[in-house]
Each structure stands twice: as C-alpha cells, then as structure tokens.
Image (cartoon, rainbow, N blue to C red; front, side, top):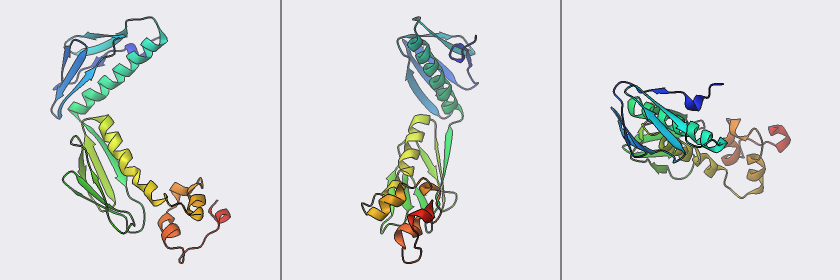
Length: 196
C-alpha cells in the first residue's frame, strides 16, 4: 500500500531548495522561507524532486514524515504562487478599509476596530465588505484571518443574560439580523423559541 507521506514532490520551476543539515531553505519569486526537518525524518532530494522517509520504524515517525511532506508542499507553493484568503463582512453598516499594514473595521461599535497585520501579510479591500489577505506563509496568513474573524466575538462578549442566551443558539452565526437583534432591540423583538 502506497503512503502519501512517502511519495516524492515535484520541485516547481523557479523554486530552489537548499538543504543545510536538516534545515531546508525555499527560495522563489515571492521570497524565501526555512523549514527545520524533524530528527526522525530523512530527506531524499535530487534535481527535480524531494521526498521524505522515516528513519525509525514507528507510527509516530511515519506520521511526522507526512507532516514534513505537507509543510514542504505548502512552502514550495507559498514561495512560488502564495496563498490568499477572502473574508466577507455581513452586517448592517459593517465596513473594512485597508491602508498599508493597518486594517480598519467598522463593526457597529462606537469606534472602529484597528488591526495591525504581520509583515508577511498583504491586505486589500476590493469593496467595503470584502477583505483579501495574501501571503507566502500559509500559517501566518491563517492566523491573521482567524484573528480578524475573532472580532465578531467582541460583539457577543456582553455579560447580559439575554445576549448570552442568544449567543448560545446553534443558529447564531448564520443569523443575518444579529446586529439588529443585539443593538436595536426596540426594532426587533424575538423570543428564544422564535430563534430556533
């Protein structure tokens, strides 16, 4: 049975890999990154492919071999093409504006929420409700997107009993009238059974 973790990866044109005592440096048109290979994994590299093999006969060693292969594939794609995440703001009056490494979000608070992006991440706002994040580092890109998405939790962090019950509803994140429900109760009055 073939195992994916043992299959060779093609090295794309324009990407160079340099093995320096267990640390692989990836260089491409979008930058360079380094990956330290686990001690239980051997590197097998030729001119056009790279593969990994466990140097111990254990399940853990085989599992970490698969992890090193997946990270290597991500690093090669990152320095060649990069990664992109698109976020969409849904809510009455929600807006986003990017200027350099600063993302300013209007989420219904009395003040805009400002988020400073990591150096490796670029941001664009094609429209007021769209945020596009780009980076050659998939891990840092995912972390930045998660931190931006976490701002919605600020909306529901109120300690009021009504808000706590609303937030625990299984349909909470799919409700398009969430902002009105929490901030404009005089306009919309729902009971918890109506929300289910």
